[in-house]
Length: 203
Image (tube, rainbow, N blue to C red; front, side, top):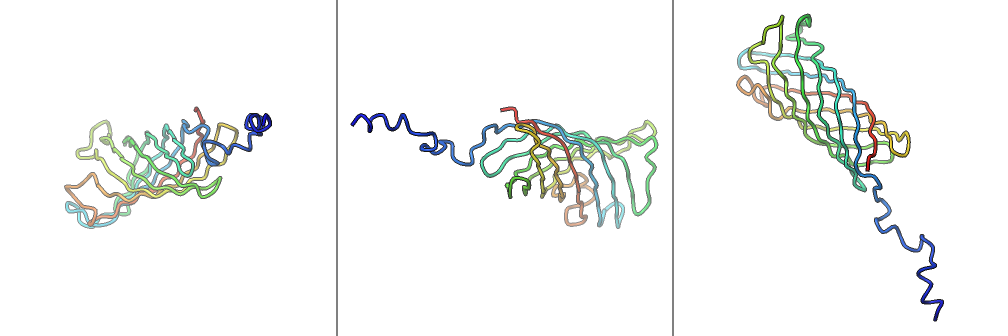
């Protein structure tokens, strides 16, 4: 009888299956930073310019946060990027004395395929600030866009708390900033991003 009474107290830890479940996350919240390069392609019809072809690139970085659940996690950030190159209808535009800042705000939900790879989808809001050319503001050069994103993330774990994060993103502009000149059906605007950084599990 005494053996039956004291058996639970003496049982090994394995007897009680992890109360939080086999896929529990010990430290769900991570913070970090990323460097990023982005390329944009706009092709189609602009009501004010006719056939329209624009591509541009930006370089910068983001502060990021993650929240992890057993099978998936959320990865979001806010960044600051500078316009680095601009091409309009096949002609490269001089970047001398041309300055424009881009502010991306994004959140993606990722599903773990294995310990290294994850597939994700989400939304990104992009603010293009007013362009400065030779110290003068360019009229109608500040816009807000909304992109529907698909993403692939690779995240090798470097230590118990630190992981490298490499993310490739392709986004479709679903709410264009220049709505007075074109609609989504008129012009295809795609955004490609490559981001790389580190995150630290804080809790």
